[in-house]
Picture (cartoon, rainbow, N blue to C red):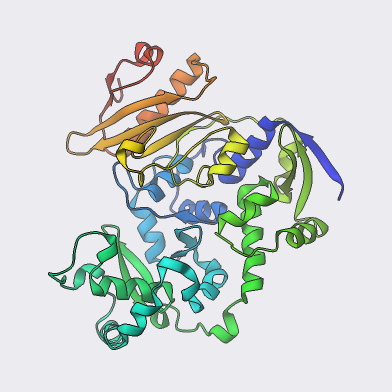
Length: 405
């Protein structure tokens, strides 16, 4: 396999950000079609319900598109441009990729905690009745059913109908056709996709895995072979043979990267090597952004040691509950623990940490403050409050300002 180029570490980072839509700002007014196009570019948009600031999927889109209309994501789902299923985790996925995930639906017992075979077997009549109810009465939410008074609080004690719905969703018998107040609305797969026939349209697992590896390579842009499988949580991926075959057909090319050694570059990025790549974008990233959701990859590529701590007990957290990485011109230079006080219309930055070696230049101060202002204003804030930050930042910004000053 011939070596195409030797690349600096900075260039490798820029190529990855270009593949993810984070190298430069959009540069034009955002359009509804950009929602699907951006999810297509990333392949997957991970879903999480935490809303101390805007929920993660909205943040991931905002980091790339700027101030779009938040209801566009729900519209893209309801229109059939996207669907939901288990990919990296629960994700919005371009609808045209439905065949890639269907094999998981047909073998849901392999999904681990996402599907409970014993529960399904023990509640067959109730589940049959639920499916008949949906068939006769239309889409439902878990909230449409009364709760069991004996149920204890917590995700481990979901009310029975919620468990039924989640299991039917994992098994592909139900699909999420819309979200209302971010709650899933379920309908029958047979009603949403009446022309689908598994024997005719479903891919084999082997075929689907090959396509998922190709999608992962395109969305990562530049990668080590060991990074690929995590993107779709592939457990038995034929990495060695896929790399050989993809290189032979020109889908990827081998490059040598400063400090990282052998890597692979997706062929769609080759034109970017013809002139110097400039990173001009500054954004706050979601903890569930594809750039940082693989801790090992973020550490190896960006020297950014990042752990999602929202599921860690408070006393064991190093930084905070929902910490946002700060991307500035091609580097992850800081992290922010933030919260939206919606009634007060304030974005509260509980703490601001600089990464080791980050230089506080005028460009950094201006770019990051503007990014914070855009982030806050898009969520309806008119004021930013910083509770803890390095003295040099507070001297330049103060600990409180109104957006637009």
